[in-house]
Length: 287
Length: 238
Ligand SMILES: Nc1ncnc2c1ncn2[C@@H]1O[C@H](COP(=O)(O)OP(=O)(O)OP(=O)(O)O)[C@@H](O)[C@H]1O
Ligand SMILES: [Mg+2]
Image (cartoon, rainbow over all chains, first blue to last red; front, side, top):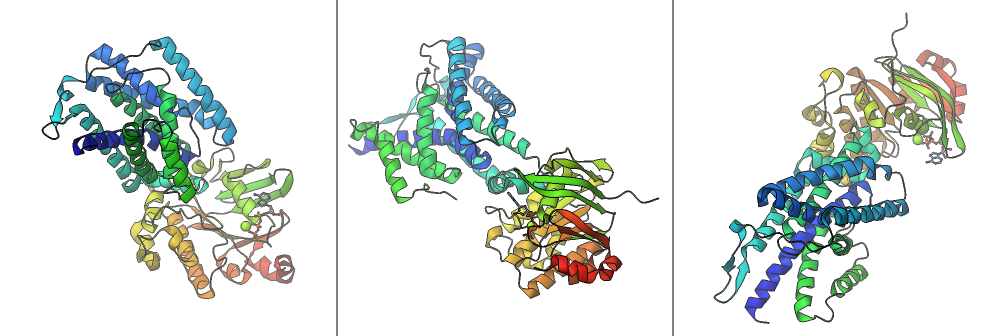
């Protein structure tokens, strides 16, 4: 592998990892703060991509379609939390699994009804198309760089909100001791709605920005869900920092494996997960 | 005519599963008063607090705060009526610094009351001021207790509820905590204090309630307490 290919793969791996982080952050946050294992989280990624396709058709504007998709995903997240997820807080993991798997079936059926089962595509917007030269011979698509930077920006925003704002303090406090948060006069259910809605929106945004990079197909949510679970488990359940590190690891390992070890590529991230769990059974950054 | 009580708890019956722990507990606190709730281990003191705060749903009984029936409200809304709680075990957040514990809790009390702010809490607890960037769980037991009390005061409550605030602390630190509680009392905040130290409570509180096996066996003022001291000490001793 010469340096140019290495560089391209490294960038691909980083960009994929950042995208995974965007999805996994909501999964791990909802688990850490609310104790909910949301198997339907991947569906939010799928919904983001389909919404993006739909709104691009409708408005012919990438930015407008992305904003509309994000807002609708946020509202959807709020409605789902208030009508379904809030029934789970005092129940066990089996009930959570049953309900959220059921939600996957419902979302898939809705996708099939609304948008059909044929692969769909979204074009890269004109202002983000084209490539930049990395070396004399190697070019890299501008759109992928845009996605990576956007994901980094969102990750930084998430970090700031969680670590530097009162909302973030409440979220962390809720993660540590729910009852005590309520005893300070704070409506923990509203906090949960916000956290869940934000998580859904981030996953949907990942779907939105990946729409121009990969075809939009049924089942894309389940596929990404499994990768996100690997990320969350490696990083330590509930740890945002862990999810960030693990997502980059998974992104890079997965990307290089596809090039270097094509026969093993479908299992390499699970091997990575197994090795890490042998060394650190609670994941890298568990609290 | 009797003034409207700050807190009126009547006929609480509470269960953990099938086990019947409170058998009709009554408590009344008048505005500005301090009430001590005493009893041996396992007699139902903490359960009484949890039941009146809604952390545990009693099977029957009523809770009124400032004349308003709060028995059906979720815990956080009851606290918003002007109640603050320092739980047994202190309720630290393991992932928040001292400063964040205080910042996250701060809010005006009812009617916009803002007697306690961040600076006043730090002036009252200078030890906390030195440890602002430590995590709550990195503090000593006494410092954690001060943080829990400071955090509660920052909600500008009408009533401060303290469950075993001096439990497990060294005598000198205990003394410091009692001094702080006396200071809070003097500032006009009503208090409900669960503790076992009858000598201190006698001087600090206006009324005293003793629980035995989930029932109120004594409810009187400090004079009544003095008059029945030997009987009460017998209820409290192991
Ligand atoms: N979560 C629980 N589940 C079942 N039983 C409980 C639970 N908590 C307390 N109990 C029981 O209820 C009774 C009253 O307990 P409670 O904690 O109210 O006592 P307490 O007066 O606060 O005692 P202490 O001085 O030890 O704090 C005890 O017999 C205790 O064993
Ligand atoms: Mg107790």
